[in-house]
Image 1 (tube, chains in turn red, yellow):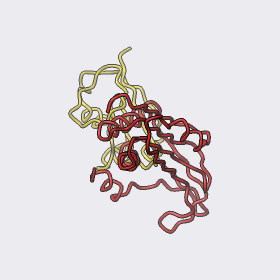
Image 2: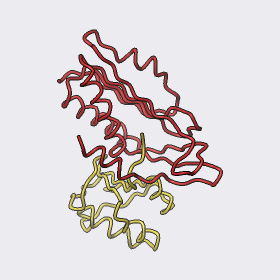
Image 3: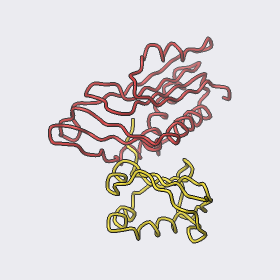
Length: 151
Length: 85
């Protein structure tokens, strides 16, 4: 469907999920699906106290919008939003929020998962984990590429 | 002046100790592969990092392959596989 309301943002500040969800809702909507990703305490057995998120300003926004447009061309969406944070994010902080709004839940579920899967393989963000043992760049996972390829 | 703007991110930026570089555009750097080959001559770290087979390259914010022709004013980025989300 053309004309879906698509919004992408990259920001250091926290986001307010309730406000993002409220802004996503359309009168024709029967379903809103949202996803929030958080900084977790451990990665591959190593303790994590914070993440440092780097991105490629200019390309990041374009990449996120392109992913939303692909989702919108595959499912009849009314609206979709992605917000990704950058900078220093302590344990437990939200990193990313994706919301999709459609007439029916199947389309909203699928689009939300598609956006997250493509974000993880295409959007130029990089995570560096900080913990008691120092800092290390997160390696990309083959399972992420597999998840994106199944669409 | 006609230039190429180079950007480096994450692990690649750290290993090269370089976030950005401006090079004069020249006909010898006609493609992305040729630019990468020229950069690899800058020293041992450059040779090693630019030989990594999972290196991703983008021209003007779009992922590109080695045959991509370069134009004056292009912005070219080198970075490792992405890990956001």
